[in-house]
Amino acid sequence: MATYNGDKFILEQMHGILSQLSETDEVIVSDDGSCDNTCAVIEQINDDRIRLFCHTETKGPVKNFEFALQQAKGENIFLADQDDIWEKNKISTMQTYLATYDLVVSDCSIIDLKGDTLYDSFFLLRRSGPGILKNLWRNGYIGCCMAFKRHILEQAVPLPKNVPMHDWWIGLVAASVGTTFFCPEKLVRYRRHVANSTPLAGRSPFGIIQQIRFRVNLAVNLIKVRVSHGQG
Image 1 (cartoon, helix red, strand yellow):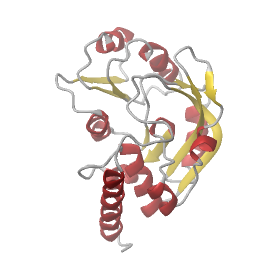
Image 2 (cartoon, one colour; image 1 turned 90 degrees about the horizontal axis):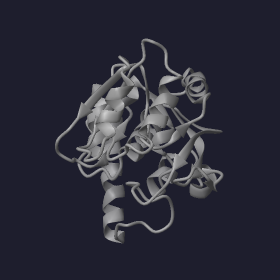
Image 3 (cartoon, one colour; image 1 turned 135 degrees about the vertical axis):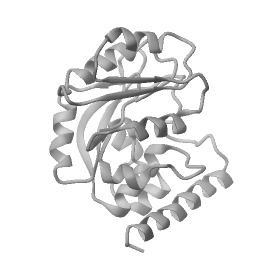
Image 4 (cartoon, one colour; image 1 turned 180 degrees about the vertical axis):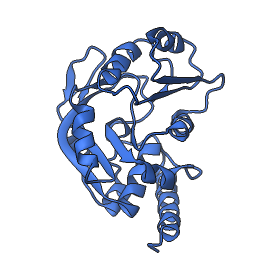
């Protein structure tokens, strides 16, 4: 989990995650220099499974998630946002699919600050589905709904320079060197508000030239991963 000024919702999210974990699991939290009480709230939970890293400088969401991923010790890695709500069967359902696939991404409903539903299905909104070219053109891998095996993490990290978002890259890596599954079950209530770091749908905040550069950069680095994995 990467956090930044998330003290309003972090307690509910952390309790929802911890309630689904075993005693040998871990929750890695990398805080990106919050100026609110995010770190203090997490520390007050007082759970030995939490590994909290509070940074003094802000690196941005991509680098912050990269740091958190580099600390992971487990075989199966789940990504989490600070302000969502996990359904009670999220981990058990994802673990079942991870027995067959290298990366699983579930659907989610989209809620507002109050918890009211804005959209019933992220997959429908984004037209999400499998396929390298499809997702290179229009990313359907949403990080807060993703889980993947360690060998995918080892292929994806460190992140290439100028990757627009970590989840986009990890999803494409998994599709290139492993197996992926788009789970139709909605296992997360994905909260959207003005402080979110990524656009949900529609017009990109980047110009067309920058968007093309992003995709060329992703494609070139995917080729490198495939070559190193013996699939060139």
